[in-house]
Image (cartoon, rainbow, N blue to C red; front, side, top):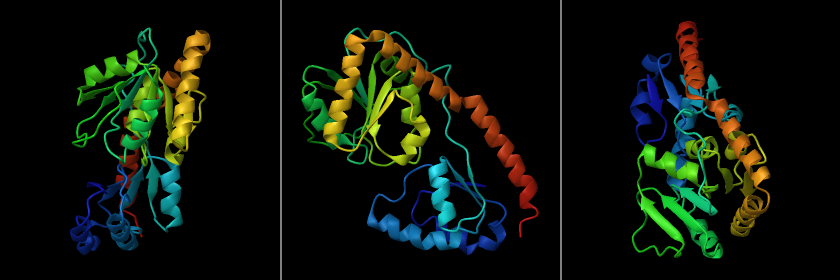
Length: 269
């Protein structure tokens, strides 16, 4: 059984049936689950029961190391994947353009987006994602598109020049992969998970505060306008990095891991 380890309260039946499920469950850590005090307290308690229970699938080595330090057993790393046949570079808009996929909540950096976009003057910033809080006033250069389907997303990402990802917490970030695969340069918050996913390639710029976000976007703009050859090189670096997470390869690795778990779980202590 594969269990998404993100819902408060749902662990209790599992813990009560720990003996029966001991060899038959994989906990998947796909979403950040420590945004608030309630989550932190809940998981600090349940983790004591989960660390020697079943298997634990994480998406980064960084998160794997966190679990190991907490005494978890049988953790393993297999990342998320990207369909690079679908998400791929295409022709860019002639004018420098920013896209901020999903930055529609404080957790995803909406406050940073507002500050940054306001300082970019006449640079268009496309914002996607459903759930923008009512009453939010966006800078005039922000074009809010709401929810868009995958085909529209591919067209938008591949036509822009830089992805703004001001998210304040991630376990991986599929959005980062989508931005890289479509040949974008990326300006994102300096989070260890995102450094790992990006591989610290030169086409990804990290920011620790609003001013660094602004400075990095303007740096990318200058590269695009004054050194197009260098911009194209960086764009190719992004796409190449994303290819490391190619869908078929990752799914094959995951399938092999499931077979391994099935074979070894019969002999767990």
